Image (cartoon, rainbow, N blue to C red; front, side, top):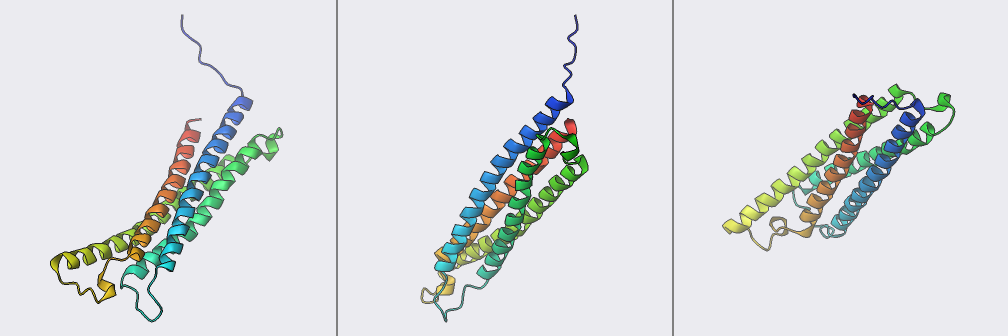
Length: 191
């Protein structure tokens, strides 16, 4: 005897979609905010440990800081878009189907979140790459004995490490947002 495929009512399908948006939205929002706070803290620590006034910063580190700040601004926008998932879930739970968000609008939001996450990761990868290249150059100079320890620009400082950490935290935050958006998109297409 063949088992009949289980048919779900449209109401239970909408509730399932609303629950997915709510859970994925909250998880993604919390993780993105956590990584975003870690990025902000490490950038603040980098600013606090920056060279004394009058002393030039290490060439190249300002590029890493610039990309970390750009990626952080993009992360704020990505967090705002992720918060829209919660609004989508709330609207889907309303009894009046006229107030439910349109499928096209929901997919546009998910597409925007995916694009923003990918661009944010790329921006912060550029910042992390330039910072790591700077650290590698400094470490190589120190190992070869070419570094004059009286020149603070040639010594690996905590500022350099904070910038790398800020970019890596930002990459993780954008990765979470991108994964959530792609996962919801894929799951919705199968529904």
